[in-house]
Image 1 (tube, rainbow, N blue to C red):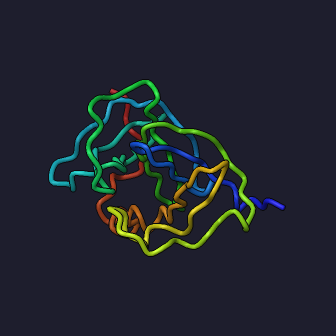
Image 2: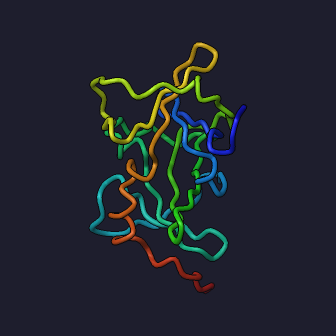
Image 3: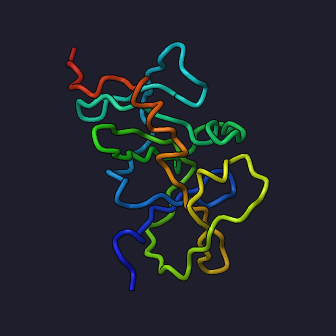
Length: 159
């Protein structure tokens, strides 16, 4: 049986597949204009105005020390995640699917060398001979750090 806690949004960075818990996902949007914020880490791309809410945006490729995408492409997306009082966008190459996974499809994270810390991974899922890395998205993005430097989550004023 598949429980709500075992439903994931699957996305791609470079050639690798990743997943985040569906209950953290508010929506997926097309790339939009991002306003840069000075003196922030390189993976922090800036903020967007989403229907009057200012939302910080992180480039997961940069956060995971991958190469920057050569150029934007039509399949790129921003996944809007909710963490209580904080909403955050992550830039991904493509969004693939919503998957329901059975517990037996998820294995613990192996001890392997990777640009992604093992602490950021909750498990590995095998689906149709593909491996999907299941992220602990709160640890991956260091939500505590982002709460300190976040943009005010207030209503944006129309000019």
